[in-house]
Amino acid sequence: MTTELTLDDLRRQYRRDYDPYNPVPIAEHLAEMADRREKLPISYSTRGNGCWVLTRYDDISSVLRRSNRGFISFPNDPDGINTQGSEEGMVPIEIDGPRHKQFRALLDPHFAPKKVALLEDGLRDWANRLIDDWIEDGTCDFVDGFALPFPGVTVLTIMGWPLDDLHTMNAWVSTLLHGVVGGTQDETNAARGKAHGEIRQYMLDLIAARRSAPHRDDVTSAALDAEIDDKKLTDLELFDMFLLMMLAGLDTVQSVLAQSMVYLAQHPEQWDAMFATPDSLEPAIEELLRWAAPAVPTRTVVHDSVDVAGITLTKGERVHFPLAVANRDPQYYPQPDEVNFDREAKPHLAFGLGPHRCVGLHLARLELKIAFTELRRRMPKFELVSGVEPHEHLGLAWGVENVHLTFPAGTRETEGSGR
Ligand code: HEM
Image (tube, rainbow, N blue to C red; front, side, top):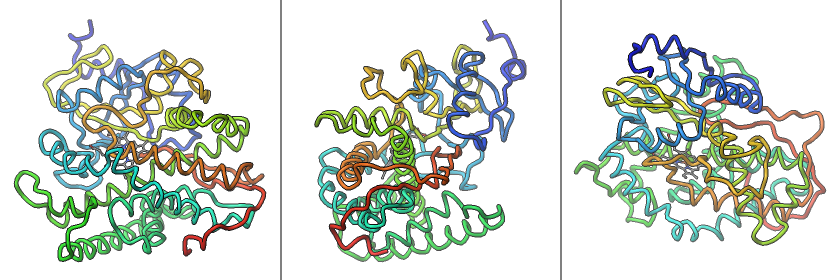
């Protein structure tokens, strides 16, 4: 039993530092995590404010299930630093307990399967408009030309925001998420500050306009009308929630789409297998979600003591776990690094588990289905442009940039996205 050890003893005994921003390819990082899983399935890293790193599916799912029962999600950051610098975290991802429940009650109905199914035709049309921006060229910057704007359109649609602002919004979000690609840290910080200021002003103006406009059946109206703890949300709370919607809805779908297309460019037989029968696509999407899971949750212990991965952690300790690592646990996924559309596997954890399980999961699945179907129809064969290397990154959502594709040019079907 390790329970008699002091916290300092445990931290020393289980010490193995962890860099959530490690500038290495995702596969290399996952190999290090596989080694950790074997040798030290729970480990302590001194980086930032210190955190425990989990690697086993069972330990990760057990912590996720214990939200509000020993763990809270604030601050949801591996370094333990609240990015907002405020007492309260991002809404709803860093809010817990009854207050979080109220936010989910407000959001969930708008993201229910039947509700998101109504968006299908509009989103399919937009997927084709985006494809038409580059289909005649025989080459595209896939992230810039599809993987980022397509989820952007989706978030704007479900929120009820003007679609004309798609490209402005995407430019802001791209700067917030990825900084100035190829620029210095100072340039990135300056650009992020400017983008944050502009998006804040944009949303505050939008909130003011929507407060005086008639109620509509969208998430924005629902949030404006909602009472949380018997009080309407302030403009800043609304801004906070809307920004999270934008970031959570964009970066994740973008990541899965871009990682998948890089993989599929290198494995054209799998691209064919995804469409082999009408029933092939859905399991293939689930397997790509398992394999490409971008999210990296962190939880904080709030009970006096909790058991995690065989040791006892005390109040204030934090645990961090990339969901891709749970999804690569060989206990449940033989040859976990291989993409295998025929797996009869345990459900993956790409959307998380427990009270914070992704609000947008039905929408995300619909987006991926539309995206892959339309890309297949318009671009049945494609490759990576030779000599242009995709660039993978870890961070608060794992992903890949600089994905340039080449394919036999096609013909336009619409007037494009208005770029
Ligand atoms: C492939 C796409 C997506 C993936 C892999 C994904 C993954 C996740 C995960 C793992 C969480 C839980 C994080 C935690 O427990 O700390 C989460 C939460 C969330 N996601 Fe997603 N997500 C995706 C798409 C979306 C979309 C399309 C939207 C909305 C437009 C969205 C909105 C949210 C929100 C609002 C939360 C916070 C939920 C809460 O705290 O109760 N996500 N997502």
